[in-house]
Length: 313
Image (cartoon, rainbow, N blue to C red; front, side, top):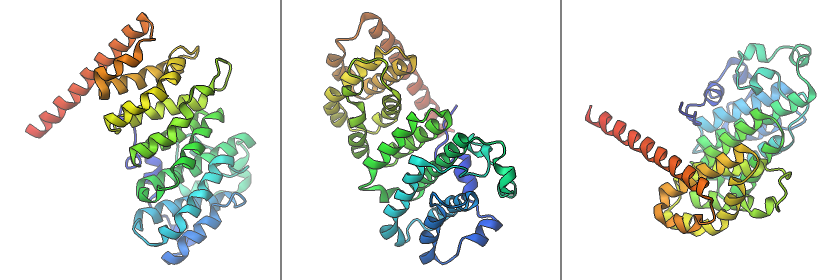
């Protein structure tokens, strides 16, 4: 199945449509919008205000992506979202269903606090809050990506840190945001922001060390590789290979899979130029890589053939 992008994601598409309540709560003057939105996005704000702040942000970014106010306010808005992603706030979102990627009608989201929170634990509500702020970052990547210049490193760091929270939903959404970032922002800048998290120092031969950030980094690298110029990717191989070697021998299967997929993507770009860096792999690992390389070639050829058929039609 194809993955949802910011353009097709149902959550962002839902939030991009104005509602009577959002129109009432958020002013129409462009000069007032972003300051008011940031007030609503404060960690101390009420749950309904936070949701309306994110919804207002998505709508404003969609409708006024070229407005000059982004030049002065983008950094402040992004910092506000990153604080929310990092810490969340207790009882910060009105409906647990949203944290699981399910949108309820806005009329149901804005019910009384007693009803909203009775089924949510403190941990659930904080996770839901962080999830909400992640959607705000994804909206900025979709509508105003040009303003991320100078902010990429801190965004990558905060998104990767989400993988340590233990919540599948939050980790998945953070990785989706990272995928949006590396497919939107300059690929070389994205690689430079990602490389520090793919250092061999992360493990120091301790298999009990937390590998979650490295796992998310490897998955993100797989999405980035296809956009990198071959010479840039080849220049990064000496830095990447120690981590890939460690990961492909890791006790956790997801680490081994992520490493294999990353190497396969690199092989697709570099071909035989990658071979000298794979000499330390075992015979079994070479066979496994060969199988996946062939699968990747066949899948790519099927996509090309399907595209050609569409053109002919």
